Image (cartoon, rainbow, N blue to C red; front, side):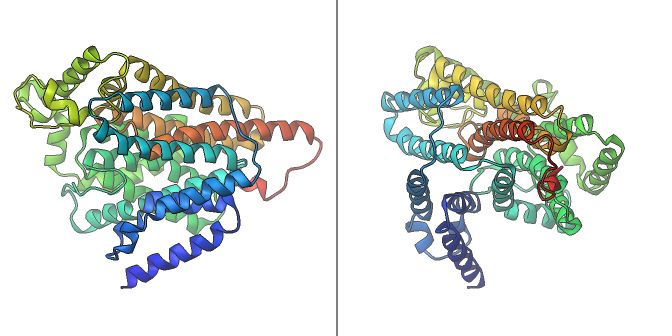
Length: 433
């Protein structure tokens, strides 16, 4: 009952602010999309009321009525082409009925991403969007992480999280939040708030590791080492990393390290999990050979698997591809994979451009920190997503759009500095320095 009252209070508060303007409606939508209030209460109203659709429809309408100028550039054209490819793949797929509901969800994700481009036009709004995404999606994950760390250290946690799926999805999704929490901690002036972000960061890291996901482990190793290499204050960063290792490593048992050891020895040990992935990728190649232009259908690998499985069911039926890139190739064909790769490269390139744009403006260093955080999050996907079908996840698409948003913000900020170079910046603006 208390949980239901709490959720109703959040919905009423979100509704009130959403009525104040489209940006607040965007925040309300993101809270609903990542928090999933229907999973926090027993009331059927939240499950059948389709709150997400109502908020999303309202958001689109008020954005259109706000008179915002539409944005059309090469990046948007790429995403539009990718959407067209996914639509054609869906409509012409032998598994149309299976693909169509997934495609409608993917369309909604990209519409909201485009709305971000229109509404998020300064760093304060950009940071607020990241804050809502991070807090909404980490509440349960960070809670489980700390709960297991304090009460059941070393035990595997294979419980799914609604918006991420199984243990591999949880590992990658949680690790994609780590650079965001680091950014939020770096761009706040309140010590207790900064400590709260670091507390949540440790919780999501342990939640990721407690999945025993090997792809997540590789991504976490990359994340830690790259964070230290990119840090300007390497001594302090090293102390932070060592503190986290002291808290986490002793609580990882021999069974965890034994599973991580199979990353390089799966052939000798005949690890069915790892060997199964190799088989699933071979099946994906067979699908791509049979349907090189449009693939077997959007998100339809599972539905088509049995038809192309040459192992006579050794690894089960209707299996997942266990790779974002092989998944896109099998489901959308070669053009789909090419567009997907170009879009990812464009997002990373936007982050790189932000770092170059603000290189001569030390007062805009917080934008470089934001670019680094998004870059690290996208690289977590590139590593973890290589062993997981994560290609159509909401958090990935939104990070891609936010990379484009950040580049636009950096361009505007440097333009404004050029215009008012003889005037000091607003002190409130410098809090993100």
